[in-house]
Image (cartoon, rainbow, N blue to C red; front, side):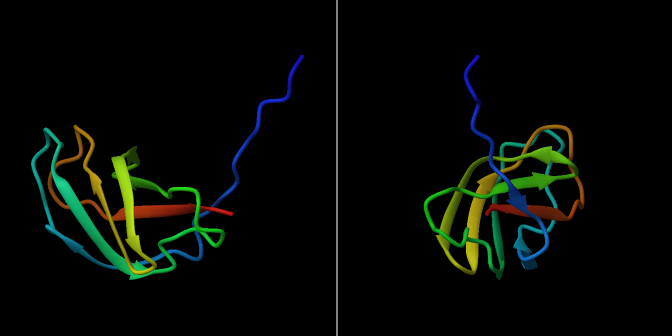
Length: 88
């Protein structure tokens, strides 16, 4: 049996301060920009996981330590606070 590598995520240090746009359609597929602190992993080579309404976003891209973008998932329209989890 081979060991499957796992990644540990930190949901405590990433702090979301602002999102644009503030709400979106239930169909998802909308570009979301998140501003905050500690949005990039401490080692810098792993992408964060972003969740909206408990559902994972796609194409999470770190712009810098204080900004990232992603595409919203379907089924979570309206106002839902995003959660950012950065790999340790």
